[in-house]
Each structure stands twice: as C-alpha cells, then as structure tokens.
Image (cartoon, rainbow, N blue to C red; front, side, top):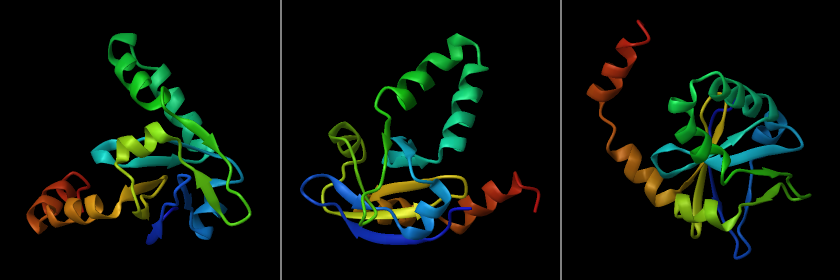
Length: 139
C-alpha cells in the first residue's frame, strides 16, 4: 500500500525523485499517466493491467474517453540510480509541474502534484465533505 506525502523538486530536465518506499511497491518499471484533479497517476504494472482490463470490459461508448485520457499520454518509466524518473513534457504540462512537487501515496497508486496545487486542493476539503464521502464506506 502506498501511503505518505513527500516534497521534492523537479529538475530542468523534468526528472523527479520517487520515494524509495514507493519504488519498492511500484517495482523496477512502472507507469505514469494523466490523473484526476490536475495530478499524475503512478501505477505498478499490476495496477496498470487492472486499469486496462477494467476499461476493456466497458462498452466502447463508455470506454473511449477513458482510453484516450489514460493511455494517450502514458509512459512506462524506470527510475535511475538516484531514484528519479523522467516525466514527459505533455504529462508535466497536464499537472502544471514547474519546480516544487508533492508525491503522495493514494493506496494502490502514487500521485504527483504541483505542490501549490496540492495545498490548494487540500484547503478546499472540509470535515463535512469528508464525512459525506465516508458515509459511502458505511463506517
């Protein structure tokens, strides 16, 4: 399970460090793609295959938008010896990554956020919105 929040910088070449704890769970090669809410999703090969299988099982009328969104700009990445991955420019543009980034664990995936956008996203969460969402968990 991927958990935690880590602050990093993206270098001029578009490389960012993936935390060592995440690399252990993600494997030697993994996938990065456009995510929701203006972030990037980082998926292990197993989670990537699961996403593909779920989308393939959908009727094409429902799946085509998801296929285009997740697969068109996706990249298979491999960390270098320093634990950095190169994020392709279109993905950096999608997430508006410039300098300060936040890498978070989100259970079965990691997410890469522009730090300012991550802080803004969190400031919009309220206890009421969290409680409402938790009702779906029946806790």
